[in-house]
Length: 592
Image (cartoon, rainbow, N blue to C red; front, side, top):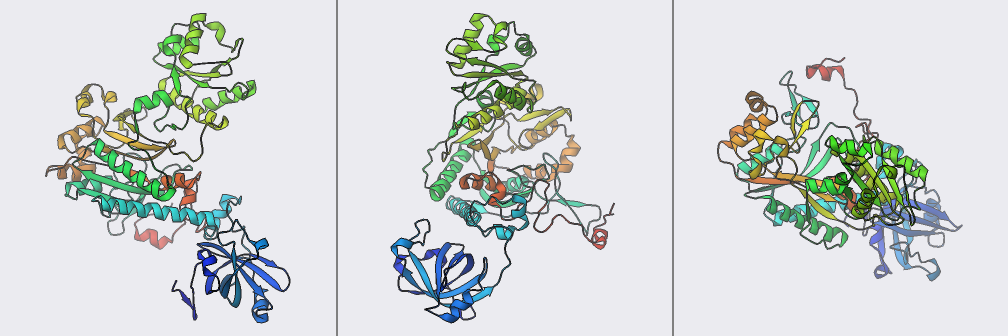
């Protein structure tokens, strides 16, 4: 290895040893994982980033070394010199990569002593996450955390190599930029030399990468930090990492194709899995109608069924009135679940959908001889039969209905679908299902602001055939936008961009910006468009989310070296923190 400490040169990492090394003298360095003293013989599990090897201290080999080893405790840092020998058959450890050999130690150097850690340095710890994050440097010694970060490194390297081989240049863009509020809140940085003015940390390199296409760079990528001041959850951080991509002279198919091959390369090299390409493509509205989500998990069925046409004229006033007011009535058929859900369980599911703004949930239990439900008495026999036929209902099934405005129905049943899949154990393990969601709405109406907002961002191109609708029915305009979804998690999204000054100005007008406001915020981009802009588009992946799914973790915090918690603080270094009044004065900021 070449590492030298006071005359000792490390020859191997701990887990890089095996039967092929028998008889060799080795120099190893690492941490004491576990110590067993059998009287006259001490066994130490020595750990480094590669894994563990058992080292043996014997009074018969060296009494002085043995006596020194008696002082070793958990997490002491050691350097040992010793000889590789084969373990006795009865002591072979099949659970250890190096379980057939051990190291008989002839020399020992204690490089650093250690206090007893606040938790065991081991895989699959049940230690409270708050403690783990307070002592993150200890948590990162655990093998599973180290594997996660090695996987993250590998994914980044594979991505860099792939893009390099396909003609992309990695180009850095600024961290200190201009605030252009549209979407999440910016993190602001006060300027000392420009009193009263602020930089913003980038929410993405969006504008810069478009300018790079205008600059003739043709194909760009960057693995880059981005910042958003938003409420956090398991798959969000205030600072996160994107694999950012942009291409010139392309349309949707070009961007999707090159990125499918990227995913296929990553999965082949990290998991040994051959992904079938091209990936499934589902238009946004179809995804919402079938799954109640624009990031559907397609590893299982249980799709939403629209029964609005059947119940519109029924005697059940709740359903009929909802349809009359422009809403919908949709249902999930939970197949073979009758024995899994008692009445009290169904009542809890009613409470569950209410958390997604639904007013309630109706249900029908289908048995061999009858339908059990409080609502069937309101329907004609032919209406009931039509519902059963349309949902494919059979004895043992439970039909679960939500009636409301479409978005509420989608949210409630989309999340209920996922909840039922977990409870009914419908989600297969170690299966990876990709798809593209395409044809997103370009705009969504913001009731609070009383204006349209960009569904993705203001630079997304509308479908050419929908441009005329910007003046008449903006809500019906579809975007050349696409998200890539893996197992119900959006791991990336992008679009073909507007490259025409007039169309970009029209977009800003539709979003409620005056010409002056648009030029104040984005004038540099509008000015640049005057000088010849190629058609271009791209995508940005959440590297953290992608690695989380590859590693089989539930939170991106487990694939980030030093993450923040839900209130955006870092527990280890106690950030954010107060600063000296002098620093605030230099930045022209008054402390409250």
